Image (tube, rainbow, N blue to C red; front, top):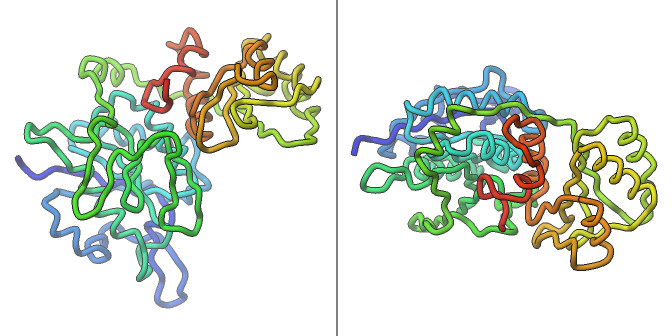
Length: 346
């Protein structure tokens, strides 16, 4: 087979920083100098091309407009490349990878996001290994030329994760991400060990149909409401009564439990009566919502609160943003409780 052709996309973030020798400040490096920073890339049997956001941004400033920009870059170049690697800051990487998995479901080529805890210009940086291995994964193909990975994934510290299953759990360890409710897609040691039974497969007919009808409208008028003991719910009820919220993500206790506070109950009732969805996810990283297990969760189920099952907070928020403004969705509950990109377990 000819060399795989990979597009490397830089959005910003720690991974792409180098230290200025004059004032020791960190600034984004020029992609033309990539081989100088990582000379080992020249040893890969891969054709690498690069592009960048016109103005690279810290991942704390990433939002829907950047996700749409990324989706368009990927769609415009889909047929020209065998795989894609996105260099991204770690703080909001889980939001970006989740959003892209929904917008580009059916893309059918590897989209690998990676980043670093230390800048590429630092001697002990984890950036080099993360970039090199991400490119190798994106270039991975079966003998018939089909890509091994056909989904949005995140590579970090010797593990490849499904992009809509991750959560950043550490700002100091090189293993910054966990995937609490779904095992890694691949583990990297001496060899790359893919778990083929965990990888998404996409029907070609579905892929063509989805990409012809790509939906890039995202509704971010959502509140993620985390419960804590002794909490006053008057502010939430006030926002709901004013019609300021299109969707409410309730971040509850354990398996989906919440105190039956009158203000909270009225706020939820008002949302549901106005056909504005309320979705319940757990504050626990691992496990799933079971609203029928305890009385403290059963009252939510009786009101019509939607189960977020084992969604991460990042996947739940971005899936709501995607579904709230999706013209083809007739039943928000059905699609919220059903996997559309491998983001939840049935």
